[in-house]
Image (cartoon, rainbow, N blue to C red; front, side, top):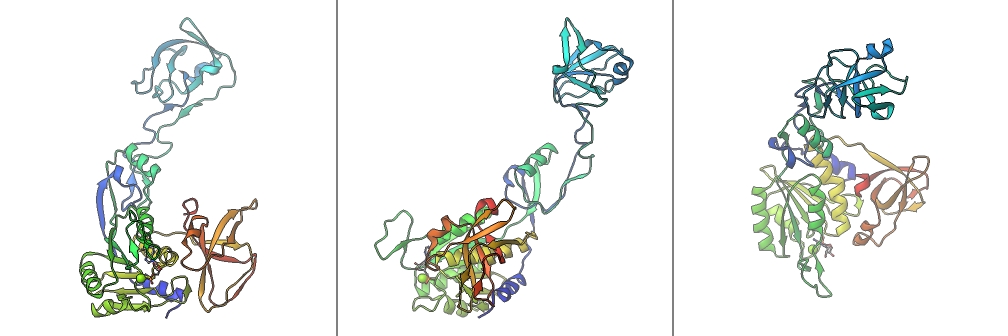
Length: 401
Ligand code: AMP
Ligand code: MG
């Protein structure tokens, strides 16, 4: 049996590099960039009007000219038309390229337009007003997105605007999620009173979809031969295997024996924690890692969040901030185990994140996951946890992740 921190260190010393791949930018949502994205030209590429109105030469206004003759009208996308006299202006639309012969855009609200002549109604005019200057945001060749960034909507739109139709992203591991247990039936079946529908595998799959990681799924009955044959096969095909259930001391928990017989090296078995104590972790000779989590849904869920996701982040070289919250109620937990307490999170008006414990009915009580937001990791060394103390949290609800 190892401590949580020891388990974490052992897992961290088994990182893998999955390489990179080039994919269409539109399919890159959720992936991590493996290249710097540079501006292919200045951003903006020209002086661009930010208002509908007219564009004039400021020295003319400074001289006292207040009425201008409209030389041309320029829509966004039109080639810029220059004025040829100081009392001329270009009627210009938002997004249009401001001609070099002008330097100041005055919005319609400040103008009176009559028969091709425009009179400026205000004296409050500044040179370069209402113009988004060429290269103000980025210069051609400058990095606009750093390697390592998570591809989200803003990254996709930036890739589109600099013409990057393909992105080099970090490759993801090949992962299979294996559920085990004779009591488990398909989701579309009506379980008998002593059966349950499989849900852990969908839970894991859904969490990993956030990483755009497509996982395979397999279900194994509590059968020694089938378990051995299937696990042997998976060990040759995947970078990582996530198992749920069948790893405890039960008569039909065949996994510890099967993994040993298949000579998967056990790196630890059992962690001083609740939930998730009978967590087994090991490595096959070809490098395939086996994360065998106990089957209780909350155990599987906690172990995936606390161990598998940080492993995946580290493999992909992603740094995430550690998060902490303030315990909002006294808690007593006596067993010599590190307790992962389910909490709801709320931010108070001081900007403090408060964690209100939800005391459920043990690891099987997965209905609470719907109403809670995070696990709070309460240290092993203590058993009295006092309101106001700060502890690390592992959020799992979308708003906090
Ligand atoms: P085990 O670790 O195999 O002893 O399973 C512990 C508990 O978790 C049992 O009550 C199982 O029915 C339940 N369980 C195991 N796997 C799943 C699963 N994939 N979906 C839902 N419940 C599960
Ligand atoms: Mg089982």
